[in-house]
Image 1 (cartoon, rainbow, N blue to C red):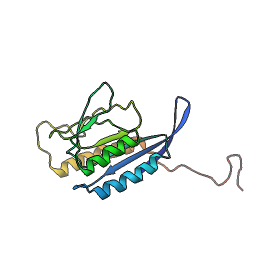
Image 2 (image 1 turned 120 degrees about the horizontal axis):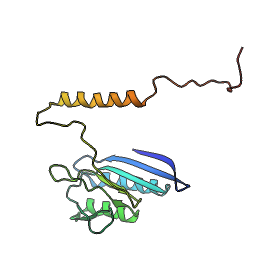
Image 3 (image 1 turned 180 degrees about the horizontal axis):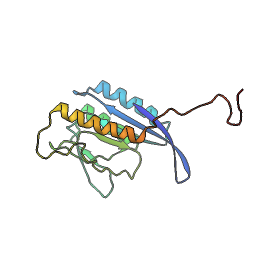
Image 4 (image 1 turned 90 degrees about the vertical axis):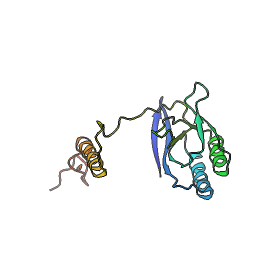
Length: 171
């Protein structure tokens, strides 16, 4: 899914393309290449881009090599790995996510042509005190957080739009 946003950075108008992607396992070369071709077409029309998602390529190892925020890939010696790494290189993207889960697996990639992206972990939705929550309790807790957010940030009434200009008083 792609979303585009018009932004201004240092008084310069830019077009930013954001993408959320999920490639279900097992990853197939044909599916990956279709996504990468589409993405290359999109990237050619925008100034900046951020692609976030699960590519299901756990075999690629990402490591920090220098002082930049970008990570360098290794162990990508197969068609899937070569396609993804070529796409990243050709489109001048970097991979910025360095947050591993409790199984020491990097689940999602954050690809961008913006050089100064910083990734910080978000606080957990549910803090457990070693008590076990079942799925229904976790979903209920998530819905409670979502409901509170909606109640505090979403307007309570629809905005009024008149078909007449503000200075016009209809009879």
